[in-house]
View 1 (cartoon, helix red, strand yellow):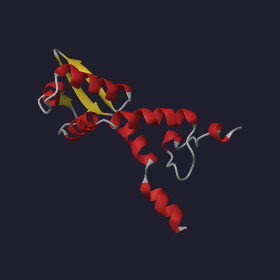
View 2: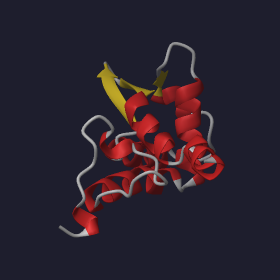
View 3: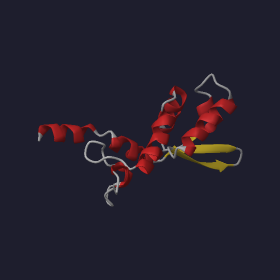
View 4: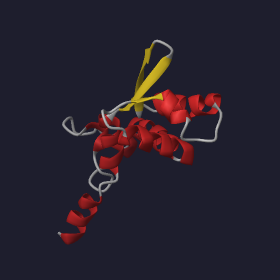
Length: 123
Protein backbone atom coordinates (compact mmCIF):
# COMPACT_ATOMS: atom_id res chain seq x y z
CA UNK A 1 0.00 0.00 0.00
CA UNK A 2 1.48 3.35 -0.99
CA UNK A 3 1.31 6.35 1.28
CA UNK A 4 -1.24 7.87 -1.12
CA UNK A 5 -3.57 4.99 -0.35
CA UNK A 6 -3.36 5.03 3.43
CA UNK A 7 -6.82 4.63 4.92
CA UNK A 8 -8.33 7.52 6.84
CA UNK A 9 -9.55 6.85 10.39
CA UNK A 10 -13.23 5.94 10.26
CA UNK A 11 -14.20 8.48 12.91
CA UNK A 12 -12.45 11.40 11.24
CA UNK A 13 -13.04 10.94 7.50
CA UNK A 14 -11.60 13.58 5.22
CA UNK A 15 -11.40 16.19 7.92
CA UNK A 16 -8.24 15.14 9.75
CA UNK A 17 -5.86 18.07 10.15
CA UNK A 18 -2.93 17.71 7.74
CA UNK A 19 -0.37 17.76 10.53
CA UNK A 20 -1.64 14.59 12.20
CA UNK A 21 -2.27 12.43 9.14
CA UNK A 22 -1.87 12.85 5.41
CA UNK A 23 -4.87 13.01 3.14
CA UNK A 24 -5.81 10.34 0.67
CA UNK A 25 -5.71 11.39 -2.96
CA UNK A 26 -9.51 11.27 -3.14
CA UNK A 27 -9.93 13.42 -0.04
CA UNK A 28 -7.38 15.92 -1.33
CA UNK A 29 -9.24 16.27 -4.65
CA UNK A 30 -12.54 16.71 -2.84
CA UNK A 31 -11.23 19.34 -0.44
CA UNK A 32 -9.33 21.15 -3.19
CA UNK A 33 -12.64 21.70 -5.00
CA UNK A 34 -13.92 23.60 -1.99
CA UNK A 35 -10.76 25.66 -1.57
CA UNK A 36 -10.68 26.43 -5.28
CA UNK A 37 -14.26 27.70 -5.12
CA UNK A 38 -13.27 30.00 -2.25
CA UNK A 39 -10.24 31.26 -4.17
CA UNK A 40 -12.34 33.84 -6.01
CA UNK A 41 -13.16 37.11 -4.19
CA UNK A 42 -16.73 37.22 -5.51
CA UNK A 43 -17.46 33.68 -4.34
CA UNK A 44 -15.80 34.29 -1.01
CA UNK A 45 -17.95 37.37 -0.53
CA UNK A 46 -21.09 35.52 -1.63
CA UNK A 47 -20.41 32.78 0.90
CA UNK A 48 -19.86 35.41 3.56
CA UNK A 49 -23.13 37.17 2.71
CA UNK A 50 -25.03 33.89 2.83
CA UNK A 51 -23.44 32.77 6.11
CA UNK A 52 -24.00 36.13 7.79
CA UNK A 53 -27.70 36.28 7.00
CA UNK A 54 -30.00 36.03 10.00
CA UNK A 55 -32.24 33.01 9.66
CA UNK A 56 -29.55 31.06 7.83
CA UNK A 57 -30.72 31.62 4.28
CA UNK A 58 -30.85 34.39 1.75
CA UNK A 59 -32.79 35.08 -1.43
CA UNK A 60 -30.73 35.40 -4.59
CA UNK A 61 -32.45 38.74 -5.15
CA UNK A 62 -30.70 40.08 -2.05
CA UNK A 63 -27.34 38.75 -3.21
CA UNK A 64 -27.45 40.34 -6.65
CA UNK A 65 -28.15 43.77 -5.11
CA UNK A 66 -24.86 43.58 -3.17
CA UNK A 67 -22.74 43.47 -6.36
CA UNK A 68 -22.25 45.52 -9.50
CA UNK A 69 -22.12 42.26 -11.47
CA UNK A 70 -24.87 40.98 -13.74
CA UNK A 71 -27.39 38.39 -12.60
CA UNK A 72 -25.94 35.66 -14.84
CA UNK A 73 -22.45 36.28 -13.40
CA UNK A 74 -23.77 35.96 -9.86
CA UNK A 75 -25.60 32.79 -10.88
CA UNK A 76 -22.37 31.35 -12.26
CA UNK A 77 -20.53 32.02 -9.00
CA UNK A 78 -23.38 30.51 -6.96
CA UNK A 79 -23.28 27.44 -9.19
CA UNK A 80 -19.57 27.00 -8.47
CA UNK A 81 -20.27 27.24 -4.72
CA UNK A 82 -23.10 24.69 -5.07
CA UNK A 83 -20.96 22.27 -7.08
CA UNK A 84 -18.24 22.53 -4.42
CA UNK A 85 -20.85 21.61 -1.80
CA UNK A 86 -20.42 24.85 0.12
CA UNK A 87 -23.99 26.05 -0.29
CA UNK A 88 -27.32 24.46 -1.02
CA UNK A 89 -30.48 25.99 -2.39
CA UNK A 90 -34.22 25.70 -2.85
CA UNK A 91 -36.42 27.28 -5.50
CA UNK A 92 -39.55 28.94 -4.14
CA UNK A 93 -41.70 30.34 -6.89
CA UNK A 94 -39.53 32.61 -9.00
CA UNK A 95 -36.82 33.05 -6.38
CA UNK A 96 -34.00 30.82 -5.21
CA UNK A 97 -32.89 30.74 -1.56
CA UNK A 98 -29.35 29.77 -0.52
CA UNK A 99 -27.80 28.59 2.74
CA UNK A 100 -24.37 27.40 3.84
CA UNK A 101 -23.62 23.69 4.27
CA UNK A 102 -21.98 23.69 7.73
CA UNK A 103 -20.45 20.19 7.46
CA UNK A 104 -18.62 21.14 4.28
CA UNK A 105 -17.19 24.30 5.83
CA UNK A 106 -16.21 22.30 8.91
CA UNK A 107 -14.27 19.85 6.75
CA UNK A 108 -12.33 22.69 5.12
CA UNK A 109 -11.63 24.46 8.40
CA UNK A 110 -10.69 21.32 10.29
CA UNK A 111 -8.06 20.51 7.67
CA UNK A 112 -6.31 23.78 8.48
CA UNK A 113 -6.90 23.69 12.23
CA UNK A 114 -3.92 25.52 13.78
CA UNK A 115 -4.52 23.97 17.20
CA UNK A 116 -3.20 20.65 15.84
CA UNK A 117 0.06 22.37 14.84
CA UNK A 118 0.35 24.03 18.24
CA UNK A 119 -0.29 20.75 20.08
CA UNK A 120 2.28 18.88 17.97
CA UNK A 121 5.03 21.50 18.37
CA UNK A 122 4.42 21.81 22.13
CA UNK A 123 4.88 18.06 22.67
